[in-house]
Image 1: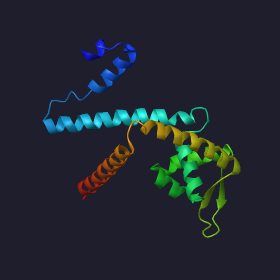
Image 2: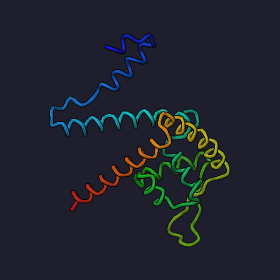
Image 3: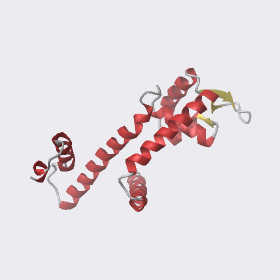
Image 4: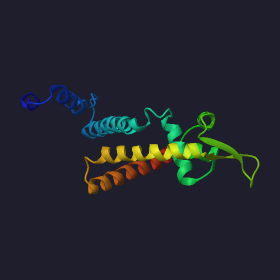
Amino acid sequence: DMFHCLNCNSSILNYYYRWVQMGTKYQGSESEILALNAWIKMKRASNSIQNYINQSLENSGITITQFGTMEMLLHLGPLPQKTISQKMLCSPGNITLVVDNLEKAGFVQRKSNPGDRRYHLIHLTKQGHMLIKGLLEKHVKNIVSAFSILSENEQRVFSDYCENLGKHCETKKKESNQ
């Protein structure tokens, strides 16, 4: 086969060959196999991209959920935990733990909401602001690097495909719940 003819690093080629060839073993219709293979490749690519991009957090001492929470606070300003939970697609209990740990580390602070004393707003501290700004810069560089294999037009098309697929699945989910 053509991969054995190339005079290159065989471990890289073997990895690539296995990655490309590992599709579904399901014996179904052509459209079922096509959809399943697309799903498998999307999941593998997503995991690979996520692992590569999240390298920027490896030595920071914070998790991806903590990073996302701090990034949200950087861009949107102080927010109630419930809003953070909804936007991060995490359970309220998980966000409580995330915020507790960020608060213990000195990166966020809970402050009473002057407009409604029933809940607190989560604020970035100066230390948290400095940390997230530095991490975000590295994170963005990793994202740009990960997508550099695609042209700008391919990135736009890919983005549109992802958006369409997401909207389609949300519609299907609503239809199945009725």
